[in-house]
Amino acid sequence: MVSAIEVRNLTKAYGELLAVNHINFSVSQGEIFGFLGPNGAGKTTTTRMLTCISTPTEGSAQIMGFDIQKQAFDAKEQMGVVTDISNVYLDLSAQENLIFTGKLYGLPKEKRLDKARELLEMFGLYDVRHESVKGFSGGMRRRLTIAMALVNDASVLFLDEPTTALDVQSVRVIHELIMKLNSSGTTIFLTTHNMTEASELCNRVAIISQGRIATIDTPERLKQAMDRVHSVEVVFDSSSSHLVKEMEELHGVRGVQKRGNKLRLLTLSPPEVLAGIFQFSERNNIRLLSVNTLSPSLEDVFLEMTGEEIVERPKGLGKMSGRRGPVGPRRSDH
Amino acid sequence: MQQGVRLDRLRKESARAWAIAWKDMRTYYLTPPSLMFGVLFPIALFFTFTVGRNLSSLQSLPILLSQTVFWASSTVGPVVIPLERRTKTFDRYLSAPMSLFSVLLGKTLAGIFFGLLVSIAPLLIGIFIFQAGVMNVIALALGIILSCFAFAAMGIMFASVPTESVGNIMMPLNFVRIPLLFISGVFIPIGELPLIGQVVACLSPLTHTLVLVRRGLGVESFNIPLEASIIALVVTSLLFLYLSFKFHESIKKRE
Ligand SMILES: Nc1ncnc2c1ncn2[C@@H]1O[C@H](COP(=O)(O)OP(=O)(O)OP(=O)(O)O)[C@@H](O)[C@H]1O
Ligand SMILES: [Mg+2]
Image 1: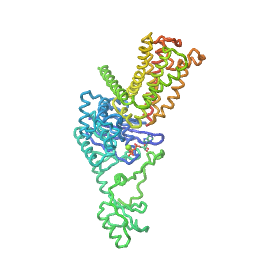
Image 2: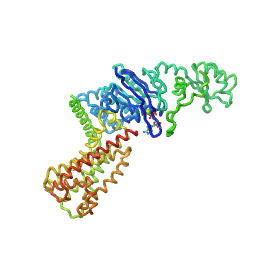
Image 3: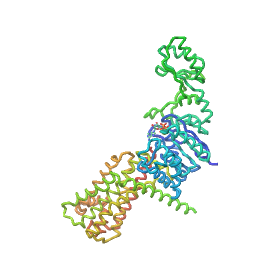
Image 4: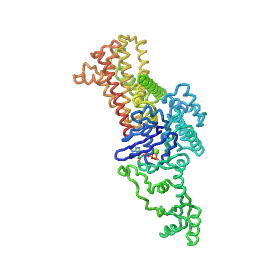
């Protein structure tokens, strides 16, 4: 069976910046493929190339076997696209937006209205279907954008951070929708920087950093890494330089990072560390100003999975392209 | 078989181009910038050119028609495209199953119809109220339709400047549109220009608009064979469209 998405050496250069740097991957039909990375990693740039919005500088890709450059028409017929920004026609109503999209994808006239109606109901926009989209909230626009990507019953659906701007309730609805579409055979390419989203929905997750794919792994491995890198953030009423060392010696602490007056203790078991912190504070008579447990950050998980530090690309520094961060000096053991 | 596939593709592409044109017509014709540059401007300029020049209504009509097709057609693209860039809706066309060429053709069609629409009223008033006689229907019709095509494509070409603001396109566009008025026989008869001026005039599509419309209405005009003017307008239309295509393609490479 032909791959849903096949990417070879795909590259995008903006001047000297390699926003996407010779990446390779392949997504099978029926997969939910997660594309996870920090801001500026090149996720949107990759998606824009795959959906024919921007032309690759180098390399090639196929969607359901159709080359995105040489057979663009056929490739695009296979796709549904949700871009990172909710791009709806502000001068049209919700229903007109869907009908116009239907025309662009060649739906016959009778089917356009039925489909629009079905999607408006599905996304809770039926009651406002005749209202101009100009008055829609960010979340409503997002829902309409997703609805518009479903008009043509695409076999490959590209979603670039589909759940931004949505409330918890709507996020759940979209997640359920993704699962449902997938179980009826749609391949999903899901771009996100939300690890929980990636690990819960995807069959495989690629982690992209500075234009390169650092690793492609299972969501189980991602979850394990997430479990390993909980952290506790603590602020003491003391600026003693010994604190870092003292914290490193607490039971269950795997590493300590100092950020301003905050100390971040990496751990497998936050409760154990919390107990240790309270004991330490009492025993040494150092007052605690604040204690927080933090859910794992993408940086920590990335470090855990690849042994490399994730570096957010500074804007405008072309020369940084493709360089990977050094192995983290802040890690104390494994 | 192969031909069937091709015909089917052509049918799909043109239906989608038309969908774009229709949407633009419905959404943008009545917006302030379209009305200002597409309707008010040509009428204002018409009065500037004609008042006090002692022209008969028959001599004025071609000037008015040349202004409406010129300004209205070339305005739609520069109004629509930057707005669609700003809202990122232009990206939708690129990821939809249609070629870039069809997208631009759809945008051009919206300009063509705006030019036709704005020109219909003066044409009807001229014919029915001022009794302008149509001497050569084909010259008149082709003059108006092909000019709308050429100027709409010119607008699309200028709208290839990758900007999100309408002003950034109107500025350079007017920088070209206004000088064209002076070398195209609107103001100064081409016969009175020096030879170099006459050569430049022949390169301006607006010259050919006036030649065809004047001949169509039986008004004396600069002496160019009708066929030459028709070919000139067709060639400029295709050239503008081709250049727009190339510009947009290079934007896709950069963005
Ligand atoms: N049109 C452009 N011109 C120049 N540089 C660009 C352009 N688009 C993106 N970049 C740069 O390319 C890099 C990758 O950007 P991209 O938008 O793909 O990141 P992303 O992974 O989608 O990030 P985010 O999580 O913020 O959406 C960034 O450094 C960005 O500044
Ligand atoms: Mg992005």
